[in-house]
Image 1 (cartoon, one colour):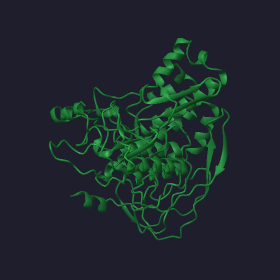
Image 2 (cartoon, rainbow, N blue to C red):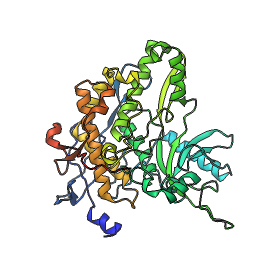
Image 3 (tube, rainbow, N blue to C red):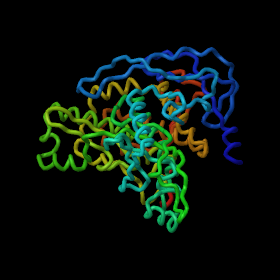
Image 4 (cartoon, one colour):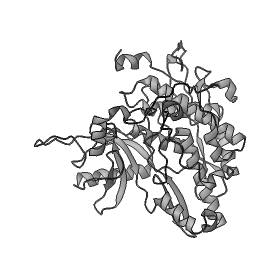
Length: 449
């Protein structure tokens, strides 16, 4: 069975009938005449009139240690009469000619400046570090605008420009990559992390979208003596954050002063702790397999500002828990050993997340992720369902840990589970046990890579 037949067979359509909880619902609506549940069973549903998308409430957690909920309106750009398979994700910008579904003024302006600079002859700059082809996008004044990571230059992709990865892929392909992740899926993982960040109002991931860019600076193949005409490449584009330093360097400076508790004022330490715990929430939900001190950043101006930024989220959203996939490579969370990871949850953040994590919110979040991941038509859609089961399992564990008020460091000790839906259309209850079914992962036969 080819990919087209598989896509047709596994087509799913979601529709909503009544959104009773304005606070918890991101509001995703579509109509359909059929639907397939997680197990692949198909049911026929009557068409219903679509309600208007509700307003979304977001908290302002960034600049203050006190947490509050403030209402803002959100344009969802949903088209009635389309199935969820045909709904284009607002996190995907296919072309500069397309009407943008993304209404973020900051991101659109940044991308416009980036395209104007490339058209004016300002070439992107290859980032030497890392295993994939990643590029700094600059403007005419040499100001960094963003980081572009083409899909066909990812570590396992055929056009990876790094020779080390090229030889590793050719000579040691059996031990290349991570068995728990979908190959060449990093650009969607980067964007998915930004989606999770925005839906949970964490505000620690720089805004990221899937876009297309073309430049002679990109890698188009190893062809001696033959020029290759540049063509638009699809990949993730993340806004560049200025004034940040690697967390490892900042934490070392603080350690020389007696640690964060001694180096920061009580107000600064509380803000740092809140944002660190937000990064813990993000990493745990997406099951990030590559969080270390070089891919989360800190901007600290004594007495003025302290901020965190979580970058390089391309190795996340696994189809299996890493602990069940490999005997030797389990990819632990790099933050779990920090002393401040043993601090209790900030009460305001904890209460907010417990209010937010309802079955209806989880349903809409998974629908968002599904629509984003299905943008890549080369990926088997069954894998997307499996990714969502892992995602729901992480949310299940996070909610239980918050209810028990366990510190972030204890999250890594919770059992790995997969969670499937019990409902077919929308969750009819706020009771997680009635809406979802959890199953502990079997560790009896892990692989070697």
